[in-house]
Picture 1 (cartoon, rainbow, N blue to C red):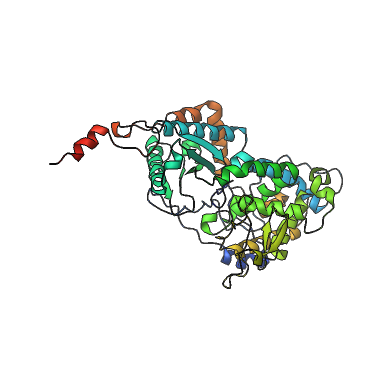
Picture 2: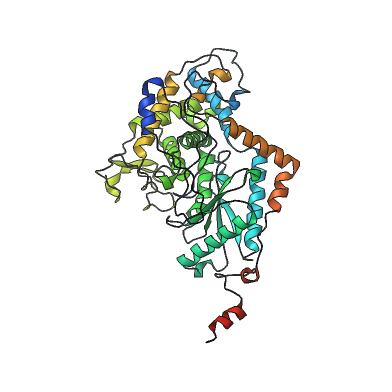
Length: 445
């Protein structure tokens, strides 16, 4: 999982605030700018917000995850009902078998395109796609390595990334490529054409840290040790994604940071829940309760001003132990220690933590106070904070049909970069022009 860089552009659209707090929450929501379609920009385009923001609590919502939710035979509590619906939601909002196949097809084709230019190129998938914490419609994070990687300068890496973007755009896989070279780890990012699912892909070049790749086995171990972790992470990621608050480049939370917040929450159990509710949440039917506890803890109780999150130490520790002191301009600044580099605060750029805190508070308020009726789609509890726009449901259906028919694979395989004599397949360092051309240019006039 890429520390501070990885993002998830989910299919979700908005939060539905309660009537008494609607005006306050809407006033605090970040302003969205149109996606910049450019090959030269040095800024990640904002996430696409889909759907509308003018529905009230009584409006019809698209809640496809509730279609299999049966009415319980006996009386149930709000927490149990929320648990059942959360299981349905997590299953729905993660990529299905066909979407994962489509993503694999794209990765194979990207590596093929890059190898047509650099024979030693190797593409590795990392982040949420590998740990199983990705959302349907979310990003694919790729890192590319070369045999000569250790001899490449920072300038060479950026030149190589720019060349990759040119190849991908020329192939027809995308119509735009953004170069984000001002980030700590330079990347290119693009979205595939509609016929290829409009899937966003981020590409970086392997560096000495490789934090995203090295974090994968650790995250997988935490997932194995903490049964409630995966559904909690997916639920929180989906929530923040729909609020446009899951993008480190925009001053909000990366998927890596969200993962560590969830791990720390379950490690410490700050609300003092019985051990069984954490160790066997499926039998105890406690996932809904744990989600509300998460919103309560990070919305009301966490000591942002004085402490930082340390998953490695299984605790929250005083900031004075690090150089992550309180900023007078933002006393609620969040600090989360990297599990790979203890001296790295992975949320140091999270400038919108106050907005995130308010959204956690609002979500808790909604889940505690929404009317509790029969278990039907019209009476969904989670639909008050999650909404699936119809256009995204359509996009998902189109991917399913395209994969089943073989059209997706055919279109992806037809994406090919035309390689000129001056950009022929090479191995190793930055591509040079044809040797004879270079020698002719060196001759004095």
